[in-house]
Image: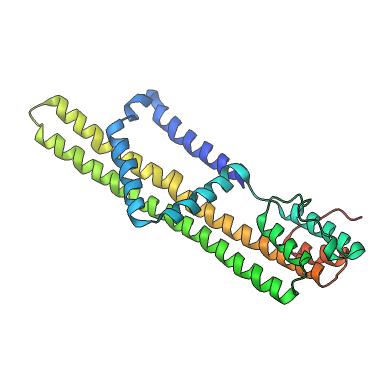
Length: 251
């Protein structure tokens, strides 16, 4: 997922950059600090007013997952669960060592701990389903925040355009003022639309995809842990989890 995120951003920025340079264009004429401050500052100000601090935390967590930490693949999750099933069948589920678990997924770690503690399978499923819904709602709130930013940035680009036009009209007798006002007017809209189309709205879509992937992975974890808790063997766990797209080496 990180690969496609970086690839999309690189391609998008490159297309815009080379379009600017096409036919002898000068990239410096697309730089206007005032217009950028209006578009960026206004967007973040409006987002701050309409969102809460905890929503910003959820959004930061989603961005970190998309650009830095990534998520475990279905194949990795399957391999871990099959290994746990093998150990549980041989030594009992109480022998599972949560601290030795190599997973970086707190959801899996918590689920294994519930199994080790001997919590009934029905209760394990209830608790993990509840936590899965809560985690999904956090991703949804992050998605809504990015969609809001994608809505606000063109609006504040338009605000910058109006400011620039007003300055231009007030300085009709001064050619320099006309040029400065027109620059702010056009560049603010450019920045606002660019941020919405290349960053905020694609990020919202990516967070939604992340949520769907994570929900599927959590369903896979729940299915595997329930099978382990009910005493199923490793081969049964493997075949169950293959429905989720993960495969693990047999042995």
